[in-house]
Length: 380
Ligand code: SF4
Image 1 (tube, rainbow, N blue to C red):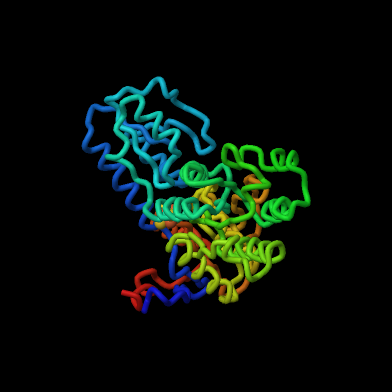
Image 2: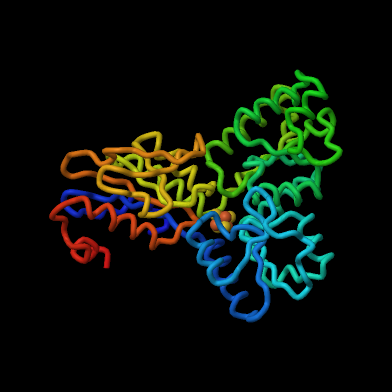
């Protein structure tokens, strides 16, 4: 029952009230990946332990792993810190929760490295790969709704390309652009310019856009994926007729993971809280966190921060504008009213302790608040 309840938890400190999302923070995949990483360190004293790239999109967790001796081979954009040639068969390589491409997996195997023992690929990501494979087997072209440079989307694209023609669209604008090619309104040459490096090898826009199915990166906005799937469905009806829809469109449910769904549903409930502002905690390159921010922005002034250290004082906060991909400074972010209502939540790659620390930091700016023990007693 509780799992179905998405209403926020209200912590009433008197002059300030926090509306905590019912679901936030670490998901199964992230917890599992972190556990395996620490195990890899423990089980391999004296060996070099590498992570293909950031374990999760959270700086604090990644810093801690690095302090304990783990080294990153690449950054999130695929730029190398360590050359493949530096790796020796005796090294330990951990595959992160997003999974990796078949090309990288084969490259590691060719160098004699063991890749399964510390493979932390989340089962929900593997589920998308399986779904893509099935679409490929049924001769559908796989349209992946995802961020083209995100590790997970690159991994999914690599796996799905083995099964059938695949193409990535990052948003509805790109879906509509691809729609022009489905309807044959744009030239073949234009396709290879518009979707350069986002389609599988040998993709033929005339042949491969007649029968499609949509999957997504597990952390996209559910409503956007649904809108994109609906768009392609309608396009196929327009082109081939409703009676032939099944031949041209695979009716897939979205492939979001449970954590993304729960966190987004809980955020929709937060939007009804009538709060004065929202503080969202998470890594600045975290896809799922950016979608929670996007939802909160529809209703409140929203501050996306990666730790309590970004709250410089009761009147100054440093936060991230993910639309412009830059840090910003805002003043007077706390309204002068009583009580101030603050929505507080975090993404799937954010430890809960960080949310605690942000709440405790914010409490410093309100006089005569009730004691924490008293406030949380009702939930004990
Ligand atoms: S966000 Fe979802 S898919 Fe990604 S690691 Fe967590 S549970 Fe797995």
